[in-house]
Image (cartoon, rainbow, N blue to C red; front, side, top):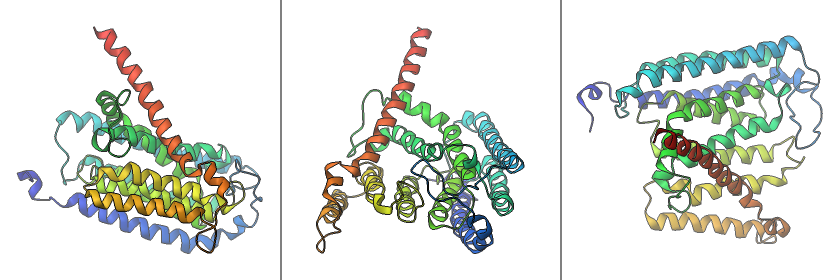
Length: 352
């Protein structure tokens, strides 16, 4: 039930969420519409040079360009961290449950992120290069993987780690609480670093990535509200990475120089939804079974010879390609949980 203070403006967070989703769509459209103005940059990009190569960077590094990009990125990062620090000092200590009312933090975050989103678009059209000119591609990919792995640890007490079953040690309540308290610093770094890593070009994979990023910024801006912890919204954000990965794999200029790797990405992230993510949702058992059967049928179709199936090379099935991403995510979540578990245990021993 809503308390008296919440009743008066009980839909504010929902309105902000709707505005955030609409903004995400419109700004992605703006990137697409202004994209042809970047053709003079795109025309001089170097060809693919392997899986470690980032396609959307200029052939030569310009000091002034990168000084501007790094300044904008660091300003964005520190302002967001400052807002989070303020919120944890002024909101958490009140120990109130999230409501649909907006806090000063929410307005502060919107005031920070919207100008920087426009600044990044302007910066792209003037100088093009993002952080990718100075740092390797795996740092951007890894930041998203870190975010997803941390969410696995945080949500273990709610949905379990696999088929709704909660993991035991090192996935303790203390470990989950640690990440619930500090995750905003880690995940905001993942968001903002990845955001400034890429130029706002209009290739399909970049467009899907920026749309996803704007949705994540909306989530970040809605912290301390009920929308932020709505599991339907959280699962949607976790799962959208499968769509983005599909775009990246199909329309790629990298990833082994072939779009043939899409089943690993889509199949792997879809696996995470079927066997972990959807257990956060209030779904009936027969619906879960239906979703699981559809996923398994997809795998069968994928590896059946054409014209019956897709005709995927069976050797990829033998390599269990659709399990590579789940193995990485489950493995990293276990590693993160173990590290924090050992730290928490060491501290508790010191206090005895």
